[in-house]
Image (cartoon, rainbow, N blue to C red; front, top):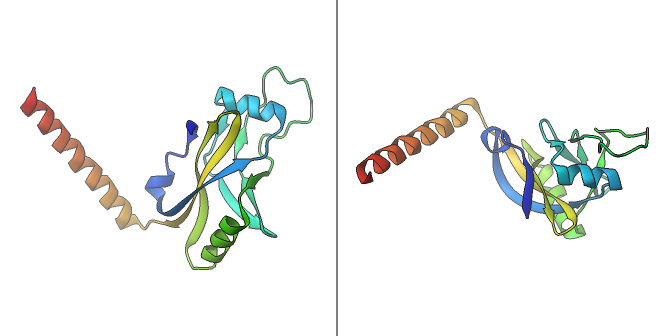
Length: 149
């Protein structure tokens, strides 16, 4: 999958439990806008209503050459998942603290795909551990580079 846009805060704010790839139902101008990279995933999430998954709060900008006046950038977009995946996600959502978030949007051939995940929110001390680990890795990489170099 060729990644178009990533949700950068997802791995910092959430502990990822399980990942899925789903197709997205888009209109013609929307897919053209996605191919140009005019997508914002900040604050986006997935809801399941009557055994169907929907993307919410994903901003897809209007395609600049589209002449239609009725474009809505934040509309709900249906996700294409198998019944088995929907059942698995639905059963896991019943546990406390678990939500479904979007990690990335990309292209597979001519189709737009969303990488979604079951996630649990991190606490403040977990975020501090993430920052500490990242700093240690950075320091170690710096030392290895200076030793070789």
